Each structure stands twice: as structure tokens, then as C-alpha cells.
Length: 215
Image (cartoon, rainbow, N blue to C red; front, side, top):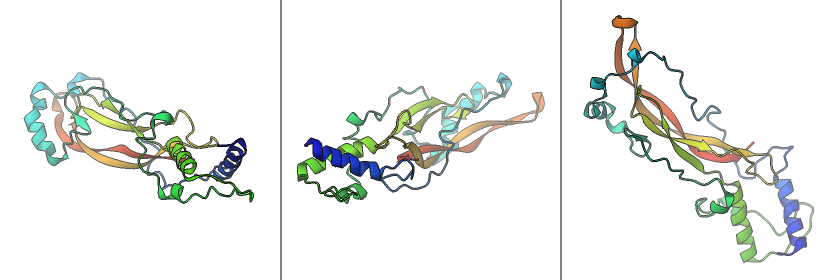
């Protein structure tokens, strides 16, 4: 690509990503929650409120949780920590998937200032792939230990990579736009001391399932 072509492309992108207007290139849905992922709960430190060995029978708890048990997002034993997505744009091309229709329709033959730009099909395809990889926001999954008062104890939690901007020019960041709900069992106690009553109750736990480049 010639230097003049690159300059015209940068001019086009500067209008598409105007920081002042705060309008993302790709059309985005509103984020369902600004509080995901969930912060760590502050637990009562007294071990008297922990489930006992007889309360942690795997067969009984699996039966109680029933079809809500999802081995893809929960684990009874300590899982191996593996990041399923890479935040590096150079490694996103294969994981970003097919180009969205908004990018395919992007007109690169003319800048907003009226200057004409000649670009071959191969150069256009390569440039759009680079732009999609740069603005793509994968969900970064890591296993989180919820503690002994949850069953299963481990959940695969989603996060949006936000250490650097996902837009060109900079100004927007990856934020959650979708979440899925997983049901866990929560050890819940009522009362005090020996008069307390404890049991397992179902609790819904939201997990980020999609991130988008947004203001």
C-alpha cells in the first residue's frame, strides 16, 4: 500500500472513530450491567458457618442441582487455569470469526473529504481483517474459586480485556454486552450459634458471554 493510500485510510478512520462523538464503528447493544464480573463476596469468617463434611456429599449435591450443573462453566475440583482467548490483536485474526456485515459494507474507495482511493480486492480484504482483529473483543475466561460455601466451588468467569484501547484512534475499550446465568448452590445459614439452621439453596450467578468495543 502506498504512503498516500495509507494517509487517506487514516483520514477515513479518524472520522469513523471521532473521540468527541464517542460513536463506535460497529453498532453496539447497551451493556446489560456495568458491575460484571461480580466482585468477591465478604464472607463471615467464623468456620461454624461453613458446610461440614457430611454436607458436601457429591452425589447428593449433584442431584439437588440437577440439570443446572454445567461442566463447561463449573467444577467441583481445582481446574487447570487456561486462558481461552488472547488479548494480543496479532493473535485475534483466527479467533475473531467472520467479518461482520457492517465491516463488509464499509466504503474505502472515498474518504469523507471526497478524496478518491484506489484499493485492490486483496488489499481491501487484508485491511478489513486487520481492522476487525484490532477492534475485536474476546471474552477472557479464567477459573475462580468461590469458596467452600458454594457448590460447585469453581466457576469459569468471563472478563473483557480493557488494559488498552480497542479503537483507532484510541478512546474506546472492551466492555460486556451479554451475559449468561449459571445456577450454583449456596450454603446459607439462619440464626445464631447452636440455634442456627443451614442448608443449600440455589443461587444464580451471571457470567460475561460477549464483549464489544464501546465508549
